[in-house]
Amino acid sequence: MDPKTLQAPDPKIEPPRKTVALVLGSGSSRGWAHIGAIEALEEEGIPIDFISGCSVGSYVGAIYASGSLASLKHFVLSMDGKKVFSYFDVVFPRSGLLDGTKKVAELFSMHTAVKRFSELNIPVMMVATDLQRGEKVVLKSGNLLQALRATMSVPGLFAPARFKDRWLVDGGIVDPVPVGVARATEADVVIAVDLNSGIISRRMRPPKKKQMKKSDQEPKFNSELLTKLTDYYETAETNFKNKINELLGRDANMPDIIDTVMTSINIMQERITRINLAVDPPDVLVQPRLGALSMMDFDQVELAIEEGYIGVKEKMEDIRALLEMPTDGVIRQR
Image 1 (cartoon, helix red, strand yellow):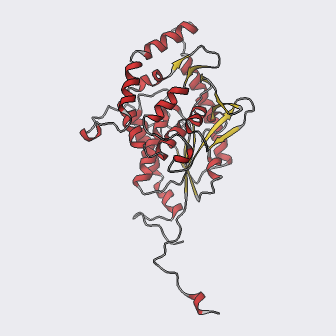
Image 2: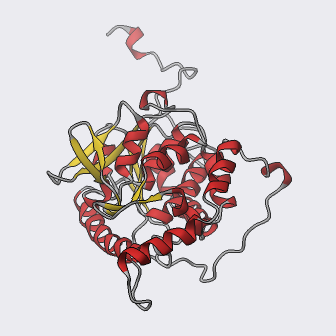
Image 3: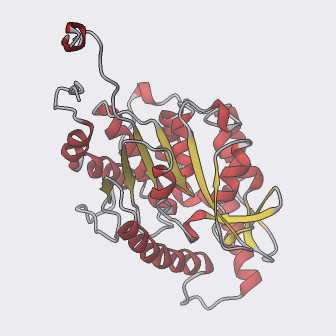
């Protein structure tokens, strides 16, 4: 045998590290937990090579892949969460109560100038649902803003999005935590964040609004656009509720239409997720304790972010074992 074939490997040559696909599930206001989850992974030096997302998971994933997660976090912590829907225009309820086409673009573009999938730093795949065929549609190229509009179109709340020859709605209807989409990337490790597990938070009281440091007071997002939107929609929350009541004339004791729609979707998504994860489980499943939050609790931003962060930290030993990474962050030789 040739002695050269028995030579020891050069210690200077590092073996290829394992790749990671991150799955960010749907969950409306619970979606801010994804911010904390990503921050925990970054803090621990865990690489993210691919992202698959659904609804708000797609939004946070795309913001992160554009390099603007800090801007988004600053925005959601400083914004009055109850006014989030004031950024959308009420329309006559033919196919949805809100028209999100322009506002989704504005809420994304205030953080980044990225407009196309090809401009992102990390490949992102977004799941939507074909309203006519009932099929899952994976969006991963072309116009990023159109894809976001489609994946975030909650049925009954937002009008469906026209995408090429299809009418698309929220991907959570068929795949709330798209693990299968992440598997298709052939990543070595798939980490999924499920926001709809029903597990109750350790903290029973609403979080206090924390004081921002002086260094944090200057927003990284487009402050001019934010000021413009905030000024324009200053009274939009009241107008929105008044228009809904005028259109529907509901009993004051009844749950309002948004709560009804979102709670119904949450029930459905929780059951679909349970089935899908049993059939195609991720390598690591993170389930932040968000069961006490409704899908419309947009004023619980700090709690959601914290629970997402803690959820990932609790799984860090499993993640490191799969990546063959010891606590010092050095990747072991395979």
